[in-house]
Length: 255
Image (tube, helix red, strand yellow):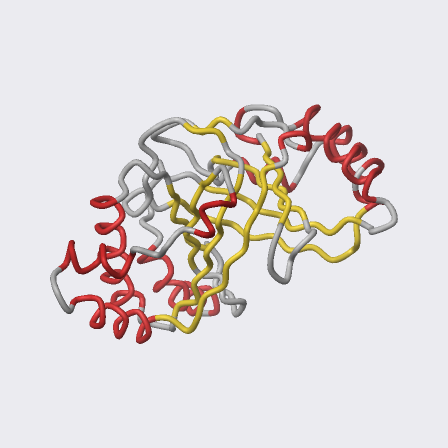
């Protein structure tokens, strides 16, 4: 009975996750370095990832959070991969465990957060190769049981960007776990220079050019009715700490 109830509560998220065995999955572990041991933490993480996480299902990239409440923390991101890869990640061999416990964990704070994200190819746009540098990470908090309404919102947003800015690359991902942290969905933009932060926002104009005059206000009403809020961070790719390089290739790419 308990299992059935949990499955029922997860249905709204699963409806929007675009379940498919081909969709990429990521495990993101947010870590905080001991402020007095950042050099040791980074050295240990770099060595660990370059020894154990350079390719295949367990490949890892590392990001440094450059804005928001998590500034200065690190995102240890395994993927794109499949769910079965996490069996090995959660039960590593002795050499792997000993290396992490000896060279990384002692220099990190005890607090950490692990999230699992499933790709949404329908609403993402990975059409060409590019090199990771900066990520604009836009989290959305869904209202319970409003996912069908939000699906229409997301469809409209995707149509705008694929019509007006199709050369840009972005990824949409759904949190695989129900949560109360405002992290149900994330839209990730990739950019090279912070100069993009100073560009004018043309989305309202683009929206009405694609969907018709007066459509933007109706869109805002539907957006407000289906979400409780949003939150944004900037991440910087740390190639020096990663096992995998920053080259992203279409069409099975991700973060």
